[in-house]
Length: 319
Ligand code: UDP
Image (tube, rainbow, N blue to C red; front, top):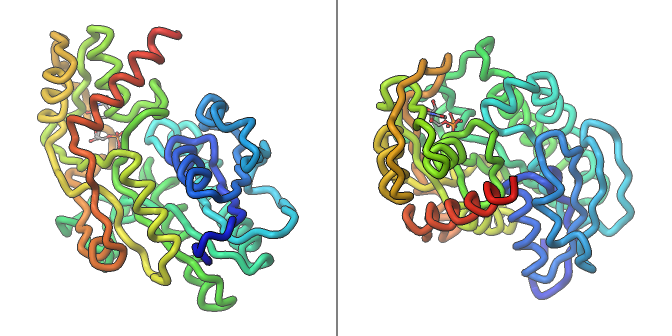
């Protein structure tokens, strides 16, 4: 991919989703042209409303598991489509498996046909409930292949495998990002993930629902940092997976207290059952991204959360 000032035409699958819609913003800001695809199963038109009339943005409502011809030129394909919250992929397990398998194949075929670059957004769920901590890219993971989360984990692991196969067999210039927990504006209020759930509960004075005893850990990356990592990765020649995430790790109970402090809410904390196969710990080792891409997250948690809370306040006023 040539970034020497040329305008490139890039296909983004899942364009109406949370991270992909921010990626579209970044690509447009860099002067590129974007063809966004989304079947709106879990994505939302509101996420791309602000760019709908942009002269370099074109949206096609399309399920990427179905064939699609896009007229040339296509310089890059970013395959970002998938239900991504545990609640969403438990609601849509077959669709999740389809978009990771068939959908990835279709997007790879598109990239191959146009001799375009290809980037897959994979996930830290590839490591399952990790026994190596923090997680390095060379760790093969601890995934339950038949558990409730397997529809997501295994489809992304398949997606990684077929991406490597297209690189090895057809020479497609591929990249694989393993995305760790990411938060920010345009997350869905009701997608069940911990950030929208806790912020919603705090802003509406509902009980903060901590699953298990809250000792499980996560590490939260602000969305613009994530997009910057993806943008750098798509310009690199690294074929093997690269972790992208914020290494600042915290217990979920600690995170709940953080949200309470930040919003000034007096909601009680309520403990609920821990979902099956919920990973006990998660923290990216980002040495590879630092070395290879010169990338690391810059937005401090309090700043990112303040922007996110502001966004959800707006959403709550509209509902
Ligand atoms: N979680 C929680 N309360 C909620 C939602 C999530 O305690 O209302 C916990 C969940 O059990 C997990 C962590 O927060 O340990 C992150 O969950 P999320 O669904 O955001 O993403 P995951 O990292 O599990 O994919």
